[in-house]
Length: 461
Image 1 (cartoon, helix red, strand yellow):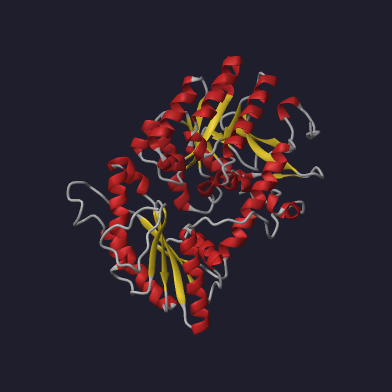
Image 2 (tube, rainbow, N blue to C red):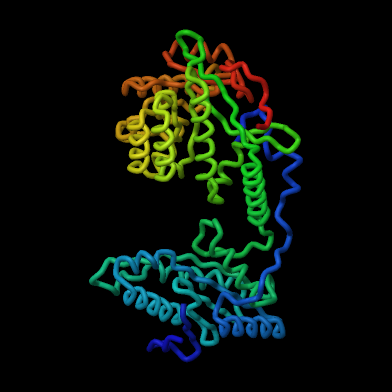
């Protein structure tokens, strides 16, 4: 065990380290509840925190219960410690953690405990402290973190970022392990406040269970080859003929019912499955292009895929095998990808174009892309966000905005596509504005068959 740094009192211990309206949705599929995660999972015993801290916490909780008082456990996580190590090395990072502990000890009562639990995490046991008192102490710790390094470390630019998770006992827990688990949940929650308390109503619990259940449902469908593509036509405004189709992901349940998989994409992103899904969709689209020489297909990729070099390498390999498919392949990226990382997105676009593919910027207008950003991307076409199209007949503001977007895009020489074209009135307005292509239910819903081959429904092969 590491030796006790100087300057700390004996009482302080430190130890080592969505689908469109009218489309079937997966959320209402009766098959889904059957794949929910179990209520409890058995696991081997073991402590993830120093044994002495767990014992101290357990004793504190039991004492509080016998005294009919209240206490609190706090976890303080320093999220940028790796940045400090990378910038200034191990010794500086250890000084930072040591000095931070000293500053926190200075604002606590003599009977409280502060201990380093992991490399970047501190545990604090507050005795005879009620929730309102804990909130005040958490705010003072947050102030220490915010101001840390302004007066010391004069020779380096150093700043730390931290979050505080807390749980009160015995109100919210009556055991050390449960308290540590709940404080861990709090500090890693999505709460915007730097002090994150454990919520006994657990509003995130159902959401987490639902997301893991959906991820399980999606992965099961993937393994059983029950993911399919539907195709929606995109119409050329001047001729009224189908120019190309957008391929949309669909899921076939075990009874043969086909539903939109759009609601599962955010879950796939969060659960680390999107690279599998986007690669599968890309391979399916390419196979369709290989089977039909006279069709052009577009498909969406996740924002995360725009940073996936492996996905680009796989696409490059497939195009080299059949180069004639590249001009008939349109990859759609969302406008939010630009704001995620413009440099990486520009590289992604340039890589696709170097292979001979076209690139479309989807949801154009939703993120207010700037002149500089659009110029840096050099996409081939833009798809105007349907939220501005669907009310075009009733909204003068939307008509003005869409006309401005069209003029803006056409000024760059870009092809334009209007989404969510629902009726003839909207079609007429868009044609008068000079839009190049239109897509929407007015021209056709996504179909579960290949219209260009006059095929019937998927057979499940």
